[in-house]
Amino acid sequence: MKSDQTWEVQDADAGQRLDKFLAVPGRAASRSRAADALARGRVFVNDEEVGLPAASRELAVGDRIRLWMDRPGSAAKAPRPAARDGLDILHEDESLVVVNKPAGLLTVPLDGESATPSVLALLHDRYRSHRTRAPLVVHRIDKDTSGLVLFALTERARMTLVHQFARRTPTRIYLALVNGHPSPAEGIWEDRLSWDEEAFVQRPAREGDPEARDASCAYRVVSRFAETTLLEITLHTGRQGQIRAQAHLRGHSLVGDRRYRPREGAPGHGVRFPRQALHAQRLAFAHPVTGAQVELTAPLPDDLRDLIDRLRKQARQQGGRVP
Image (tube, rainbow, N blue to C red; front, side, top):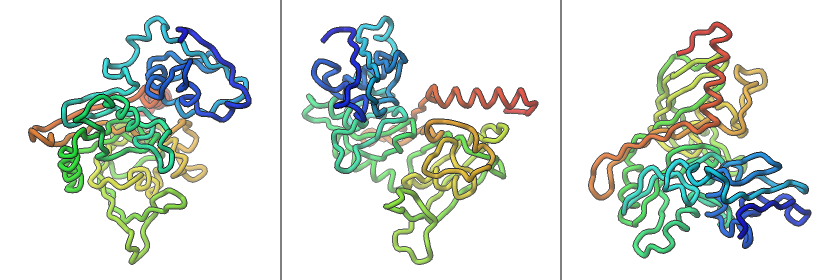
């Protein structure tokens, strides 16, 4: 494979995902290598560098795709040596692995789409040569949510960790940028939610709904901006899309959320962001073998940090007091 190649997308490849376009012989050759190239800044679309969140980007006829494998400085560009397979691994031992997932990458493949890139698929590539270790799902976060995800590497560890999550003993803390200004400055959100399979959203449960589930979390205001608020949210339960749904029910949809949209004209409605502004920042749990407390923190990704910095600067320019 040449170290610097460029292709122009033809009709046959129009609509194909960028990572699938790259993951063929003569290009990156595999999903894991394509993810690694994206993570290290070695991929350009129409002369613009793109990162791992662009893996799912659909290509159009005429797009110019450049794969520059020996780009100067790219060998050190991934955040940690463990990111050689496109994953930012914050903790790894014989029993478990914790990944700082980028937005745009699935935690696990969707049903019937096993070829779609996901953290689980990349981990399978990583541990393919290990006879005693294989990634096993403990919990998951949404595709366009960034942050910490825990996988077991043995069945014993998986059973222990799943039991911890069922008992709600792990600490899971998120940062969420929401529309408007929740009041009071801290509190508890409690709801009965029911999953709508057709709309793929959580809805308030009807009386007597056998599928209804309790949803609870604590929130705390971190910073208030002109029309938005940065919240720290601690999960008590872990329902699918819970934070997004509970914030939406209170009129404070997450900035950028396209599924739980804020109403037209709501405070913060005009703030643009390409995904829901949600980051799984902190995770703490008991190690499944030693029992020792494992505590991890994932830094804010660049896109969300830049947005918060911009909102903070705008608020100060407008004379507001921003913590």
